[in-house]
Image (cartoon, each protein chain N blue to C red):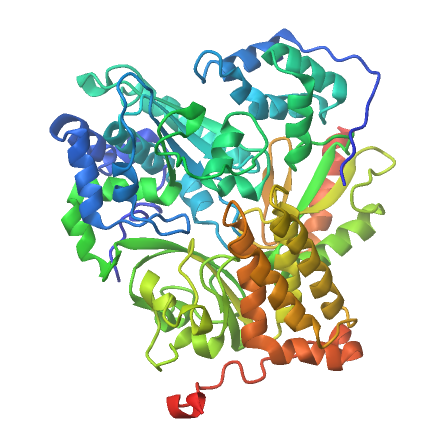
Length: 174
Length: 454
């Protein structure tokens, strides 16, 4: 079960981020700016890595809605992180069609390689992982995705997972 | 080889760009509709085509459009449902990735038919790459005068936007999708009123699946009557099938409805048979929520007739011996797969995805998951199968939206057809955790009718 974790770190939205918010809001009729909530939470998460309570409060203020309207949405949808995650969050599809082509083995391998349980962050802050429900790529399983771009990795093997983790480590150290 | 209507140009290099798509006859349906047809003419062509909603329910698209209320001075909306999340289904992702302009073109024609001036494509949030692809395609189309003000000088204005979801299967249900598009939790609404009367922002709204919208393009280009000539009976046209599981050639295939399932499964033009030389044990024909069938009942109906890939033939025998076309999410299970484990996996999925509004679904999906978990891990009881059927029955039909049915059907059908395997898990608790039950009699020829009746 998700828990809303607070943080005292103040959050500032840059002018660039605010202008992205404004672009989203312009897609809806006047007075229906609440429709921008899901896209804006994605933008916030891409910027800060998760959706903290202070960030959600600022989003509420920006959209002229109550903070609870933001919390209830962020906690309903699975993509918003209510606590900090690793820089790279490996999300592995665990549903039927991926499972019958070996998703469990891939998740076991990731757990052993990273040395952390599902939902935990590696000590260097680089990685976390979790099983997620069907990612609509059932013909190319097992699959995993990594936000905030949600790049897709298909037909996974333990070797391709090792290479991916190695590449990401290299990328982070440069 | 059957003719392709949607994927004909899928392998043309650069077909994801406006110029290449246009050079292959793209956007001709927009020109034809906006310049030579009235909105009602377009609705009429879609009605004549017999097109049935490709998202899963199979409701006739033209009829859905004709229900749209058109009060004076009130906005109307078209919303495309691209929240593809039904396990086994990945056709919409494929279409949006490789030929995004087909969807944009369909959206323009459909919006014109419905009188919508603003339309949204609601894409599941995990498909951020596809969202970027669609936004680029929309910008290209707008730049060429196919979107925005006064399209092609016809006086018709249309703005098209892409909306990301947040990762919730339930938002594929049309009223939950509208709630989500309004920035709320994806709790399905009580119907009536239907979206055609009060949908997005309380205005008349049509919600259609990606593939349904894309199919409008060939329907307008060739005429509804021509489209209706393809297929079989009330299953007209072509359908995208997402083929996954233990297949030699998994992928997205466009078929003429009415293709024999045996040909689809085993011919090299399509799935190419079961991977690694194994035998077929079971099939889920239309996405995880439709009843699972053992190989013998899938390939032939109870009357020993070859089964076809059509809405009617797949449903032949009702839920006793048939299944459903659903969204076309085709999952093949080979002889090494465990039906109990798969049923538990699906039950976990529905429990995870239940929005929690209705008690039978919120509680029942959790109970089914727990009971199936204990069966899979060797702690089950003989009474568990009847318990599961009982819980499934009490969910089915007792919820606001069809997620309850979708959760109940796979469990009920697995026990109906694979009860031996469930019982084996109870009688062989230790073996059940180390090996699978195997294919047993599930691929044997069907008993003759008289034997089955006795």
